[in-house]
Structure formats: C-alpha cells, structure tokens
Image (tube, rainbow over the protein chains, first blue to last red):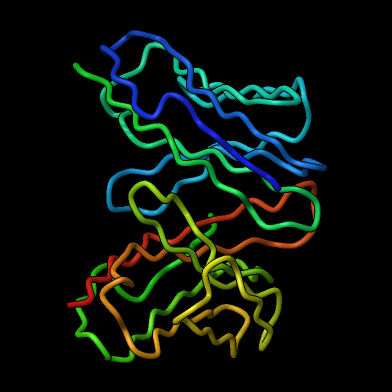
Length: 109
Length: 114
C-alpha cells in the first residue's frame, strides 16, 4: 500500500532561519511527487512536481528535492508570509494521489 | 492559470437535508475529484470522475453521490446530511497525459451540519 509521512508535524522558525521539511514515501512505480501549500480555510495551492530521483525545483525561497525514498522542501531565509501547512502527495502509475498529513510551518517576525 | 471554483465557501445545513456542492473547472480537464479534509485525518478521496457521466468510488464514498453531466462540472451530493459530514470539502481537477497529473484545487467549501 502506498504511504506518505511528513515530518515534523509542526515547525516554528524565526524569520530568516532556514530549515527543511521532510516527506517520506513508499510507492510502487512513482509517477510524480507533488508539494502544495495550504493556508487556513483555503484549498491547497500547487508548488512543485518532481518525477525522478535527483530532480530539484526552485521557487523564490523554496527548493524541493527528491530521492528514491523521500523529498525535502528547503526553506531559505523564510518570511512570516511563508507560514502555512505544506502538503506532500505521491502518485503511482494508474493510481490516485496519496497525501501526507502535512507540516504546519509558523515563521515568527 | 487553471481555475477551479466551488459554489459556496461556507454552508450550514440541518441533519437530513439534501446538500449539493458544485465544482466547475475552466481548463477542459478530463479528471475531477472530491475530497474531504478533517484535522488529523488529512485529505481523503470521496469520488472521482474520468469522463462525463462516469464516476468511481474513492476511499470514503458512503453517504455521498456525485454527478457529472458536463465535462467542466462535478457535483457532490449528500443525500441526507449527518453531523459526521461536517468537514472541509475540496474539489480538484487534472488533465490527461504528460509525465504527471498535477491536481489543481478549488478554494474549498466548509460545511457545518447541525
């Protein structure tokens, strides 16, 4: 059975304090790994898709990386507006998405 | 930009009422999905559709039905609302083909059943 876990469950950072969020997965035949950002009371907003080990994607202060077992979302010099829940999801070939529980990030000014 | 819209942001209904949640996407996507999101349980798939008039059960279909009469519109129906259906409901859509099917989400409908 495909599974996705995320750690930590919650993370509190000072503004400018870089860190990483982890997404560990087990899936047979990875088609894609997806990162989303979700603000309270809103739908998830798409950030990145990664397809194969070694791939990296960047957007502003965020950088996503992928290995055969996990993905990291690196946040460089975060700002308070980066505060949100970050969701990871995987899709195997011929299967629906499997979402992780999310990491709740708070960035304090 | 992909746009997925949902008919209501907030709904309050009584137990036993029939509830319709509407979702519309403007990107000519073939695939549409309904999820519910609850604290501690994450996103759970209720139903999905790969084509007009086609539907497939997800992980938690009990108490729900769906309708897809047009490609751009996917409706979730609660035949007789119950308090345990109080939740955040999220609609998503994807295209077909390519290396991966990125799901794009609507803003969500927060449903309270009293």
